[in-house]
Length: 224
Image 1 (tube, rainbow, N blue to C red):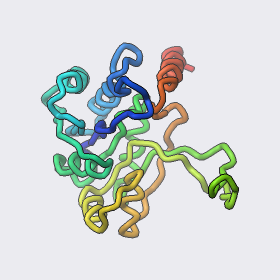
Image 2 (cartoon, helix red, strand yellow; image 1 turned 60 degrees about the horizontal axis):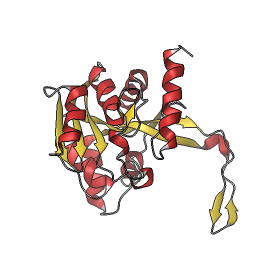
Image 3 (cartoon, rainbow, N blue to C red; image 1 turned 180 degrees about the horizontal axis):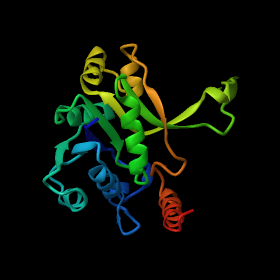
Image 4 (cartoon, rainbow, N blue to C red; image 1 turned 45 degrees about the vertical axis):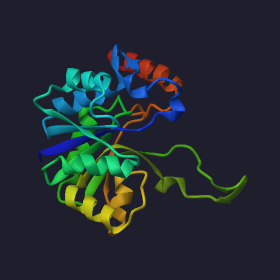
């Protein structure tokens, strides 16, 4: 199955500090460049649409086109909320299914992307995820009020591959935002499949995450 991809890169990076995490160097290239590069090399991925806060920002445009090439990668402006940015990206795509990737997950691999695309075919969608290994508690204030069964808990990652029109229809049903695309489809009663992600497919949120990602890259390079 051939799908277009949307890279969501329009966030404010407020928890990262003064610098923009997506332009921070990781292994010699900006964090954003990693996702664009691996998506552009995947056999199942056609066009790549990168959603930026400011589509004219020269630093971001350089990061985008250096690693994807202007012939296959398009840039569009995002919105205030995640859902606004995803919608802008989806409207720039033309395939029935679209892979949505968080630009702050630089260690995604081609294998993960291909697994999720394959799992989505014929279904409303599929997401990369991994089983939770910690014991999770639901907390109200500072008091535990829920003990969910760990065997049923998975930590969601990206990419998340969705039926493009179903996502747009779900977004039109309510103006509220969602934290991920599987939750958006669930508004219409559509449930996504899960494809195995990876513990190394981390999201860059805090400055120390760059050091963790650097060490993971070193292990990957050593074949570990």
